[in-house]
Length: 65
Image (cartoon, one colour):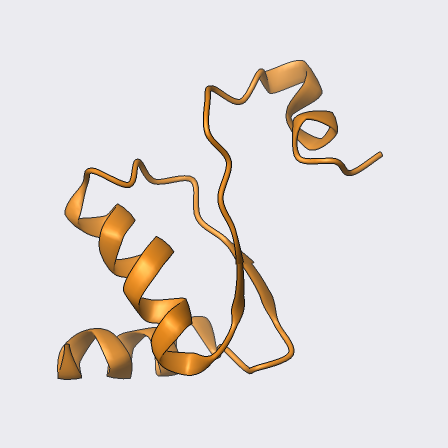
């Protein structure tokens, strides 16, 4: 957890006002580390999307136009 806290802070330059999205699967080590634990430890808002992102419409799937 100390390593995850440090890498999330220094590599992603995360701040409390940030909205964070990671395309990893939640079942992967990258997924639960950088989707769940990292943002929670730093107080950042996280976006989770269940399903497959359709490439031509990926931003529409997430609610961005």
